[in-house]
Length: 366
Image (tube, rainbow, N blue to C red):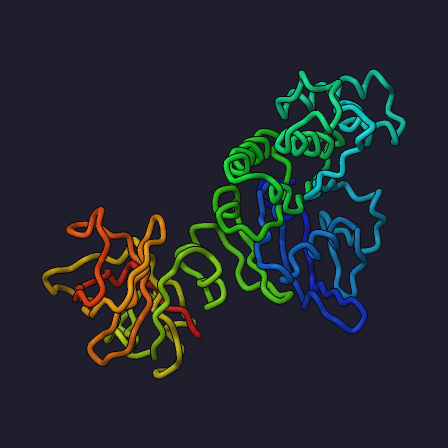
C-alpha cells in the first residue's frame, strides 16, 4: 500500500437506535499512516463512528471497507484494529506486563515471543521498569501508556482512541498529547482519535473531521479548519473566532463585501467558489481571529471602524469587548490588546478605533 492511500472508507454509513437516528449518511476516508481526529460536542456521533469501525456496534446502513474489502459484517476479533478506551480497561489483578501481553496470550502466542514483544512495547512507551507493577500502583498517565502498549503489541493496522486523555489533568494531558503524536510518527500506524477538545485536535492531528448532530460538517487540516471554516457551526466550535453578522454585497475578484453593524467590511473569498456565487443580500458572517484585530488610531485602508466600549472582560490571552458602532448596534469582539493598551484594560465609554486586513478575514454563510 502506498503512503497516503486510503486504508479505511466509510460509505453512506448510518446508525439508529430504534427510531432514534444518531448518524446520517457519513462518508469518510481514513488515510494509511495518518493521525485523524474526529472532533465534536457531546451527542455529535463521534464515538458512534469509532464503535462502528471497531465492530462494537452494527451498522444500520452503508458499508465500511478496509483496503477496498467490505468488512461491515466482519466480527470484532477478526478486524485488525485495537481500541484504547477512556477508562483504559486494565485488568487490576494482572501486572503491567500481564496486561500488555494479554492479547497475545489469548491468541496462544508462545511465551518467549510474548515476553519479547511485551518488552519491546513497554520500551516504546517508556515503561520498561514498570513491568511487574499493578495498575493501582500507576499514575493516570502511566495507565494510559499501558493501555496504548497493549493496543500496539498486536501490531494493528488502525488504533482507535476514544477520548483517552479526558480523565487526566491539564498539564499531564498536554504531555500525553505530545507523547501520543511522537509514538504515532515513530511506528507509522494509523490513529483515529475521538475528542471534544479543540486544542487536542489542533495539536495532534494531520486532519480533523468535525461532526455535529450525526453529520460531518468539515474535514481538513488543522490550518484549514482554523482559518477557513466552511460553516457557522465549525467557526464557532473551532477556536476563538470573531463572527460579525451581515448581508453579502459585491464581489471584487478574490474579495467580497458584507454590510454589518460595524459598517461595510471586505473579506477574502479566495478558493471559496460557494461564497463567490452566493446571492447578494444572503446572510453571512465576517470571520476573523482576535490576533487579526488591531488598534488603528489613524483611519487607513479597508475594514477600519470605531465605536464606544460598552463593556469589557479579561479572558486570559485575549480581551472581550462589546462595541457600539455609530448606529448604536453592539458587536462582541475578542482581541489581543497591544500598542497603548498593553498591560491595561480598556475602559467602559472609551471610544476605540480598530481595523483588520481583508486577507485576514473570511466569509461564512449563516
